[in-house]
Image (cartoon, rainbow, N blue to C red; front, top):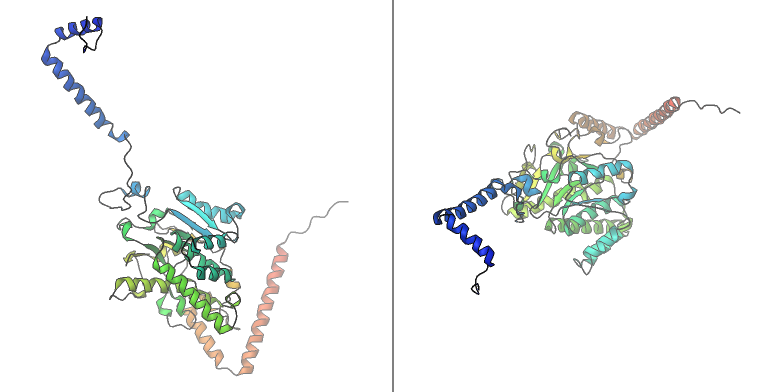
Length: 420
C-alpha cells in the first residue's frame, strides 16, 4: 500500500523511480536550470510582442518618451475635443462644409468632434452656465439677448472653450495637420495652457485711423485651450460690459444694438481676443511688460506665461500680408477658406463714397498711402466739388454693373428650340 502522502499511482511511481535511477543526480539539477534559462531567453526575444502599459502622466518629455506614442494617449491636460459652430447640424451640411469638417476627424481619429448649431446652442449654454454648471445666469441672459450673428458666434466660441476647452475652429477652416502638431516637440505640453497663432502683424499701421486696431492681432478662427482658463471668462465678461455700454449709448436693448465692422472686430473679434490675451500674459508675468513687440516678425514659436504663440504661417497662411507664407509649407497647420465669412455685409466697413474701403489694399503700404492722400485731398475740396466727384463715382459704378451683366448674358448659351 502506498504511503498516504505519495502523489503517484503505483505504476507511475515505479516508472519515475526507474527514470530517476538512470539519470545522474547532477544532470537532473542542471536540466531544471537549462529550462529556466530557456524561458527567460524566449521572453527577452519576444518582449516587443508584449503590449506596453499606457502613459497617463499627461506630461511629454522629449528625452524620455517618443512623441508620437505619447500623443496617442494624452495631450497634457488639453481635452481631446474639436468644436465648431454653424447654423445647421453636420448631417445637413453643404458638400463644401462637410468636406472641410471631415479633415478634422480624419486627421484626429482619437478626438471627439462636435458642432453646436442654432438649434442646440442655447441648451448648451444653459446647461454649462446654469445652476448645475457655473451658475452664471447673467451670462445666460447675455447670450439669449444677443441677436447679431457674428457677436453670438464669437461669444459662443469663448463660452465653449471656457466650459470644456479643446480645439475651436471656424466651420470654413480646414485641418492640414493633426492637432498634436500644434505644440512643437521642444515644449512640455504640461507647461502650455493655450495655443494660438498670429493673424495680422502690420504694426506700421497701428496709428492708422481705420486699420490701427486691426493691425496687430492673434487669430481666433482656430485656437486651443485648456478648460476654465481665466482669460476666457475675462473675455466673456469684457464682451458683456462692452455690449451693455453700447446699448446704453444707443438707448436700446442689447439685442437691438447697431454695430459696424470695426466695432465688431474690437468688441468681440480678433482685437478683443488679442487684448484679453495680452492682459492675461502681463498678469501672469508680473513685473515684465508684454507687448506686441514680443510677437512682431515672429519666425519661431514662443511661450509666454504658459501661452504658446505660433508664427503667422501656422493658422493664417496665404493671406498675402504679414509675411504669412503659403499653405504648402510644413509650418501651415490649417487653411481658412473664408466661405462662411459673409458677416461684414451686415456690419459694413467704412466705405469712402469715392475711394471705397481701405481694407481692399490688403495692408499694402503704397496702396494705403495713396488712399490716405486721396481721402485727405477730398476733404479739402469745396462741398459742391465733393458732390460732383461722388456723382461721377456712382455713374462709373452703375456703368460697371451694366457692363458686367451684359458680359454674363453674352456668355449664356442660346436656348435650344423645342421641336413641335
